[in-house]
Amino acid sequence: MSIQQIKTKKLTWIHLNKATRKEIEELENEYGFHRLDLEDCLVKVQRPQISEYHNYIFFILTFPVYNPHTREIESSEVDFFVGSKYVITLTDGLNPTVNDFFQELKNNDQDLDHYMSGYQVNLLYEILHRLQNHTMPMLDHVSEDIEDVEKRIFKGEERKVVKEILHIKRNIVNLRKIMQAHKNIIKKLMLTKNKFFMPDQTNIYFTNILDRTKDIWDILETQKENINAFQETNESLISNKLNEIMKILTIISVIMIPANLVASVFGMNARFMPIVNKPGDFQIIVSLMLVMMLSFIWYFRKKEWL
Image (cartoon, rainbow, N blue to C red; front, side):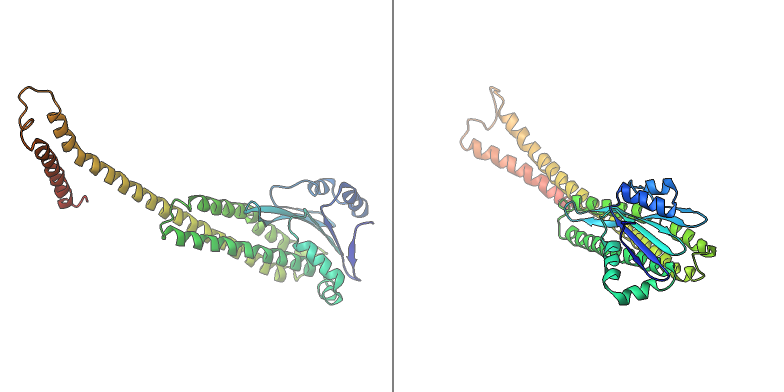
């Protein structure tokens, strides 16, 4: 095969980053994998899945990756073929974790001996463990964004954080979509312990992976509840501010009504209009307006509307 691989006495690890159709055909010729499984490796699969055969297990998991240009969390796919003496991984190039680990084992004999001197479940566990570790900083980053939004809300920046809240909610939704099927896939992997290529130690290893999967999901649940709560709080504060503005504008309008009424009355062209054309008529009319306006203000303050 022209495909790069790491081989020990007990185990072979083949890793393909952005596999081509030619490389997929080489895998088919060498290992006889099911054609549909290989086709899934060439297209982006929307959801994780697992298939079990008499001589190998094929499963797909998705993991989050952060796009710094769009600030969006996207999905990265990792495909696994696990047999009695081999582990084959295929990635889409978005998540460097598996590729970095592969290069680490190629260049470090001590790590190679540690991870590939036993059963394939040891290697599989470490790959999944590192992929989960790669997920944790993204969860921390989302939590920091939520804390920042909380501070800005209570600093009076309600309008400015509306878009940021929606951005955080989108990332949490993306994370949940990516991680939601992991628990079921890991549970199904644990049920394969009776397969000749999966030793009795399977449950020991994958119980830890399953627990971390549950922890990640619990964190996402908490983040979802927090951002929803802050969104409601932010909307309430914005609504209260708008109500205050409408209240002030309404009071101003009501206060101006008597002044407009007086101006309208004395603006009529009636022949015998009182006060008009008398000495100090302007001052009297303006004073009348002010008295009426101040009376309304006093009344509103007495009712605690102001």
